[in-house]
Length: 399
Image 1: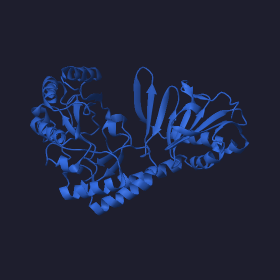
Image 2 (image 1 turned 120 degrees about the vertical axis):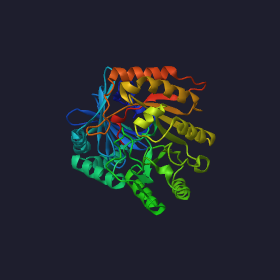
Image 3 (image 1 turned 135 degrees about the horizontal axis):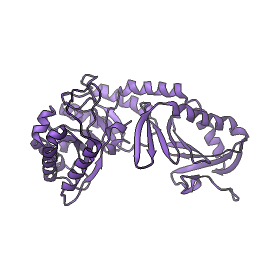
Image 4 (image 1 turned 90 degrees about the horizontal axis):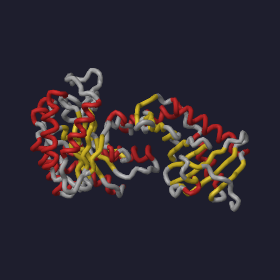
């Protein structure tokens, strides 16, 4: 339209009509004078209202996010809702799924008024015809549909317990379920499930089901789970990777432990592996009941780097409490600085989380002590080509 009105602005920075990721835009004035801007991109569509509240839906009609200027709620595929508040820092928590019903009421209001609304902007001219079926689909995604969708997710995965932060946007395929060891004192991720390895035939069926569930997705990498996928027999693992590479042109990553067999990284051709080092202090590793050593971590990381695979190393903040605090920092800094890490690699500092009923019983460090320990570790790092270093808060993870 030549005489287009003021287009709603998202987060007060620029016109939604100028957002490059959205190829279709439609601004409506509803009969009650409410304005709403609908935008369609390759993997999602959004509804943005004049108060800067925005609703996001994927093209399978799932509600994915509600955003305001102060906070946002993100619905994971598992149905969990992560609430992030942006005030005095960033605070995250898992909350109830009531926000799904709130989003549904907003979408229903737009859908019901759609045919009588005034079109203030349309790009292209047939934008109303493109949005009508999307709104009809989204209007059916109420709290009951959300919970049914989450139940379907659990038939595919049961759960995605944890991912490295740079893989939160990966599409996950599970070659194994659970953890083959399950003996670490601090880890409660897999205690409720037995370890099981899929056959290549089971894995191929799993891939088909996961692709059908995700539909058209914006996920830009593959994570091969769960905890011990790389301990599978070499030929089984190679067949599973062939299945993935026949369907996707995406980088593939996985966890690798440093206390069982060392896989043939060169043959696997993985983009990145993640090692739960936890600490460089062998005494603390034994106390944590983790059957790895600083030497085995070093050997695993060195082998991966020699094969051209980048590495993410995960360190546990607060492990062992005050008893091990000094040696944990000293030995972890020593081992990290000796690893062949550089640009393209990751070091994650993850605060210890102890769930009720956990076997871990040592007194926990305070948040201030955890922060001080992290700063001491960061200060001690001496790399010529520095890897990416970041905090890894597992409590706020949802998939």
